[in-house]
Image: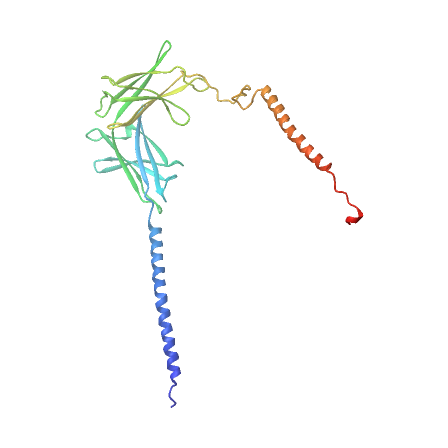
Length: 312
């Protein structure tokens, strides 16, 4: 047999070394790719943590508005969470009674109204409520609880000659009987397009009553109606309470669009101002036109250099 040439051993050894180097080079890249894939999976698994604000408002028709506000911080920006289902419960001892649900609007807010007869206070006269968002594929679940005592806020408009006022009365109903609430600050508002306008406030006396004067020059609708709102905000025991009444105490304001007279502050200025403005602009731009015309005329009348046969 012929001995294998040393060149074959050298080429085989060189090929083996190159393959080992190629494997060692690819190994870190595959590890990095696996780490990036795992990080991507973790990012996909991470869910948004929403925030749920839950309040209640007791109204003078003895119903309660349960209000939920859903929002979340995504990429450093706060977002209103729309079209989410929020379920409301009453919690008594260890039992939970489902009251109903509502869907958040574009502003992330939802309101669910419930009659007082559907709620049962506990031994301490409190009503324990809970709002729950069950979560979905992109968001975690969240829930909030609150406890309130039943109370009633009543508003009575009073008109004596040219003096307008409202009498408010606040009573505690948690014991089954009406008990006056003393030293509570009641705010009086008038309904407006975007949010109620505060026009006064009063503090309840030993009978749970207060009297607040109302201005007689408030703008109303085309019939002069205004909606007066009495409100107790964020009380430690009763939460929020609200009562409203409609009276013809406003100045009638028509909602129809009417042509306004010509005036300096309107879109239609007086005729004399338009005529003056047109004359002034005509004089100013007329001077510019004359100057430009004269420049072109002078350019045409500029003497030309004479040429003769010797210059050709």
